[in-house]
Structure formats: C-alpha cells, structure tokens
Amino acid sequence: MDSPKRNETQDAAAIAIDYDRVDVAAIMDQITKVAAAAPLEEARLSDAFSSSPAPASPPGASGIKDRIRAWMTSLIRPFFPLIRFIGLPLHEDIRATQESLHETNKRLDKLTEMFFRLEEKTDRIDRDLNTSTEYIRLLHNLGHNLVVELTKLKIEADTLKGKFRILEKDQDHLQRRERALEDKTCR
Amino acid sequence: MTIAFVVQRYGLEINGGAELHCRWVAEHMLRHMPVEVLTSCALDYITWRNHFPEGEEVINGVRVRRFPVSRPRVPEKFGRIQNHILEHEHREKDELAWLEEEGPTSPKLIHFLRKNGGAYDHVIFFSYRYYHSYWGIRGIPEKSILVPTAEHDPVIHLKIFKDLFRMPRAFIYNSEEEREMIQALSQNQDIPGLVVGVGTEVPSTFSAERFRRKHGIAGPYIIYIGRIDENKGCPQLFDFFLRFKRETRSDVTLVLIGNSVLRIPSHPDIRHLGFVAEEDKFDALSGAELLVMPSFYESLSMVVLEAWALGRPVLANAKCDVLKGQCRRSNGGLYYENYGEFREALALLLETPRLRAGLGENGLRYYHTHYTWDIVESKYLAVLNQLGAQRS
Image (tube, rainbow over all chains, first blue to last red; front, top):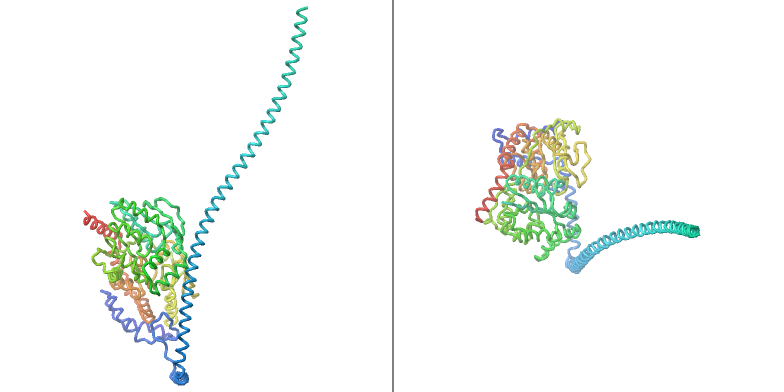
C-alpha cells in the first residue's frame, strides 16, 4: 500500500530542475504537463473550484440515459411552441416580480434612512434627557441644602431670641436695682 | 516638504491590508519629512461606525487627524446596491450612490482637504475604491498621488473609477500586474506610475523550535497566514490539501494563522492557531516547509514578502495574476491553477529540499532587491522629488 506515496518521487524525477539557476517558469511548464497527464484518482470528488473535467458516466448507464432522454424529447417536441407560449407570460411575471422587488428594496432603503434619522433624533433626545435629569438632581440637592440651612438659621434665631429675652430680663433687673439705689442715694 | 496620507482607517489595532501598508509607509517617511495622516474615526470596516474620538492624536510619532463618519454603512443595503450596479444597466449617479453607501462617508475629511490641502506639498491617497479617495482626489488633483491597492475586483470596471484613474499627478503601484490592469482600464499611461509595494522588517531573532515546542507541532508543516476567509481562497485550499493527504498519504500538516470567518475542516493535520503575536508568526514561518497563499485577489501579499525575507519558498494561487507574476519574477515560488497542479507542485516541493532552498534563496534575493525599507523609501522619495521638480 505504499504505492501512492511513490508517485511523488516519480514525478519529482520526471521534472528536470537546474538547481544552480532555479527557473520557476520552466518548472511550472513541466508540472502543468505532468498534472494534465496524471489521472485524477478522486475525480468523483472534484468540486466547483476544480477545473478538472466532470467524471464520465459508465457506458451502459450513459446509453440508457440517452435513450430515455431521446424518447422524452420526441414525446414533448410537439408541445415546444406551447411551452414557449407558456414561458413568455412566466418571464413577464418574473420581470414584474423583479421590478416589484426592486421597488420594495428602494422603499426599504428609504425606511432604513428614516430609521437612522430617527435613531439620531432619539440619541439627541436621550442626551437632552440626561442633561435635564442631571440638572434636576442638582436642583434637588440645592433645595435640600437650602432647607438644611434655613432650619439651622431658625434654630440660631430661636437661640438668639432666648438670649435676647434673658438680656431684657437682666436689663429690667438692673434698671430696678438702679432705681432702688437712686432712691437710697437721694434719701 | 510636508506630506499627508489619506486612508480609510488608521490605528495600531488594524493589522492588515492597505491600512497597515499606509501606516508603515507613513512611519518610515517620517524619517525624511513631516508627515500627517488624515483618516476617519472608524475601526470596523464592515459598518465604519465611529470608534475613535474626533480630533488629533500622535501614533508612533505620526500626527493623525480623525474625522467622523457621517453615517455608518448598512451592509445589506450596500450589498443590494452593489449587486444592482454589477448586474444591471445603470447610470453614473447609481455608481455614486454605491460609493456613498460603501463609505466611509466623511464629508468633514473632504472639506478639510479642500480647505487645507494647500498646507501639504503632496497628498498620498490609499485604496482607490473608497469615498475618501474619490472625493479627495477630485478636491485637490494637483497634489494627489494614488496608491490604488487594486485587485481583480469587478467594481474596478465602474465608470467613475476610469475617470478617477486619470486624475492624480502620480501613481504608486504595488505590482507590475496592478499597473497593467489600471493602465488597460483607463489608458492613463501619460501619468507617472512607479511600482513600489511595501517593505517588511524581519525580527532579529526567530526560532522554529520555540514555535514547535509552544504549539506541539512535530514533523513537516506548510503554513497559511492571513484572514481565513472565502475571498482568500481558503475553502479551496482545505479541499486541495485534504485530497492531497488522501492521495499521497503525506505526513505534512497545514498550519493556519489568523482569525477565521468560516468553518475549518476538523482534521488532525489541519491546525488552526488563531491570531498570534508577530514573534510567533515569524517563528512559525521560519520553520515551515513553505508558505501557501491560496488567495484569488491580492494587490500585494505582505506575508509572501515576509516568507521570502526569511528565505522560505511560496506556493501561490496562479489565478491571482499578482502572485503568479511575483513568483515568476522572483523565481521564489511555484503556483497552481487546479488541483492537479497543486498536487504536483506541493509534492515536488515537499520531496525536494534543494528546490525549496533554491526558491527560498531566490525569494530572499528578490526581497533584498525590491522590498527592504531603504529601497521602498528611496522610491517614494524619487516620486515626490520628481513631482516637486516638475512643479518648480
């Protein structure tokens, strides 16, 4: 089972290379020839990327397929004009659908534009709202601070009133004392 | 002399394609002159949603000005419009609607260029197919240099691009094939165009052994590095590789490095390592028998240049003209158009160490001749000086 690996050596040997002056174009010419001559072992796996030809069908199967295809073709040949006749409105329909889709797409594009404009507006309103919220919060803090300050002032005013009443009483007492002393002095 | 680079996205987070190409060139040109980058705020190339903040920042010494994307791309709508213009008769305004939808739509960037373009001596646009290049070049054609990074993509045949390719003062191409394609499309042979590409830097130390130990890989392996995507030809590679294994019973392993956007066949000899650090990548590349590059569309494969910089041979998809042309010019790799050629070429390479060594040496020589940073920088300077001399 070592045979696959050996293809490489054979190919390498089949390609003449001047190692002192490596010439890519010359090597590629030889590689292209070798690749074209070598059968693709896994042609059935060839994919859309490969430029290799599609694998041929087995001769027997191909014969049956051809006969069936020929029979089917002869069977529907009389209806070809009719099929074309049916195909025309279908084609018109497809065109109309395409036009309609194009129009819908254009409307969608306009809607998308509007959506973006709305999004921008929403962003702007959002920003304004954020600013207002911040402002309200500041006002609230200010109100709170004012209440605290006013309360402190009221307490201070009450204290001062108390002090004032005491001073008034002291003054009355002193005045009474003064009058008593004057009476005594005059006598 | 001050130059500006204009590119669809820019940042350290972006690790491939024209954006990385632009960043590397900008960072290297900074050694010779003041450089600025004008770009969008996008990070995601599917929707171009704003990610980075608008304004200026400095990335690896390069001043980057970011402009917001006015509206993100809707992939479904973009797909529909693209199918329509590729498959139906259409007018120029349909193509412009397609361009608008493709994005990254950043009118502020174009406005800035029109208003401040005079501050730059040259403006180098990367990637022909995006909004910034189309409108930017139209805004200041007398200062524009285009690095098209074009592939054999059906949209290159749109009429708007034929006109665009006749506008810049000069082109910097990635490959001979790209130049031929664009000149054939637009007949712009009278506009100067130099094939430059991009340089690559190889780390001073790399170790295949370290990579094998870290990831538990024994025996010979071939490597694919890049996004694992249908557009990159990965499904075909998996199919060909598995058929090759079945037919030849080779003990070779296929190592895949990069993020995957498709299902990878479950097979013991297909090892997907995901996205890896640069050090790991070079370790892996240095130990590989060869780099396989199955992509159908490439304007310049940076990873192929990195393989050659490490003296590793390449097996590329011949359906990509650029890869095939580079393999032939460098004599640094073989290529295949179908499974038969893939099988013969891979078998020949795996069996013939002398051939691998010879191809690797040729690739290394090709890299030293065309793709070291000194050479790439000198070519850019030559283009800029030539244009400066013409103007004066």
